[in-house]
Image (cartoon, rainbow, N blue to C red; front, side, top):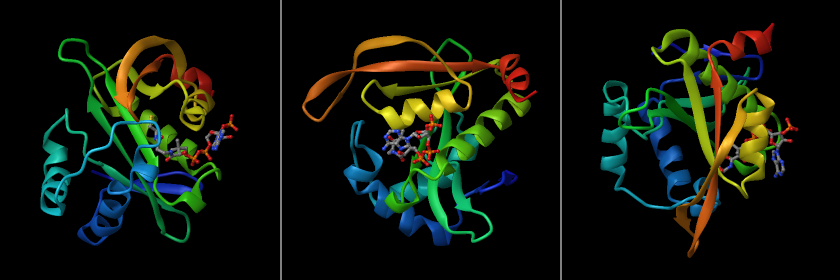
Length: 181
Ligand SMILES: CC(C)(COP(=O)(O)OP(=O)(O)OC[C@H]1O[C@@H](n2cnc3c(N)ncnc32)[C@H](O)[C@@H]1OP(=O)(O)O)[C@@H](O)C(=O)NCCC(=O)NCCS
């Protein structure tokens, strides 16, 4: 996988030396799952899942780290996965793992790079994302890069002791170049 470069961030495949830091984020529910289910793996399971991800379209493992430019500080991770057993689209997910790096536009640019890459190189016409209806930073990020809210899945995700509604967002190949132009 090639690196994807923007103005303030670059996406590149995870390296061995990144894994401990990312695994630390994965073990902090406040960082990775403020609006999501939380679960843990062993470090070895986590490292094996990252190594296997390029060969598995359904993998939920991180596919790229997000590093800042020009400092090359790793501040987050993003991924994508085949989201439905029959329908043909890909969903993206994203975490800015360093709390002090949030709110600077890094997430917005990183997810924009990933969505563009998937639409330009993948077989699918639509890229989507889902997020808890209470996750304001997440859906504002999606709207900022041109995904449209397509609907609400009611009581679709259980976390923090109750069922939560989830927004469905998406963008099609024909919309994204139009938005950039
Ligand atoms: C969601 C997340 C990736 C956003 O990353 P970020 O780098 O902080 O976001 P950006 O700085 O690019 O901002 C994206 C948008 O969210 C808004 N935003 C960021 N933080 C916000 C906050 N705390 N409250 C409200 N809006 C916020 C920004 O203003 C921006 O919207 P705008 O373009 O309309 O101004 C980050 O908050 C995160 O990692 N959260 C935990 C993991 C998570 O929930 N991931 C998504 C799962 S669906």
